[in-house]
Amino acid sequence: MSYTRTDESGIAAFEVVPNAEMKFEVDYNGGKYSTDAAIVTESTLPATVETLPLTVILTVEGAPLANQRVDLLRVNDSYITYAKTDENGMAAFEVLPEAEHKVRVKYDEETWVSEKVGGGDSVEQGF
Image (cartoon, rainbow, N blue to C red; front, top):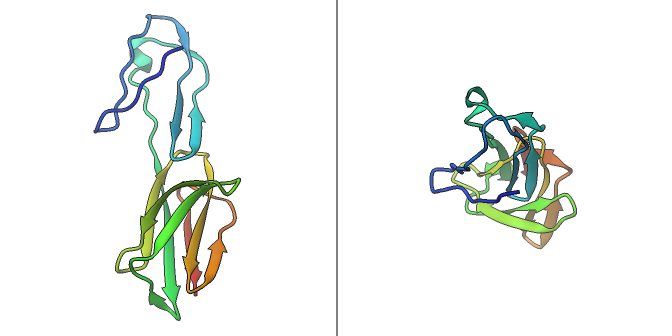
């Protein structure tokens, strides 16, 4: 078993034994993604895992809520990271395919936590 981190462009490199059976696993933003075990050949490399956007749109009485903190959570409600909404009230996270998350917003003494969401989802919440 071998571990590494991606470089600044999101690429991780491994030395592999040709024709060996391998499985790749990625941990990112609280999610885990695993490939099936397969024989590694030149035609199966490079292996790529792409993230998917998870967007949150916040409004107050119909108007965009800018510069609002939005927390990305694991489904057990533990904290991962945060993003701030832009001038359109939108915050975005990159998450792994099939990973499930929740998002949390604390606004004007109110705390809102979403149901389970994942990559490709867009969540809208008004206050």
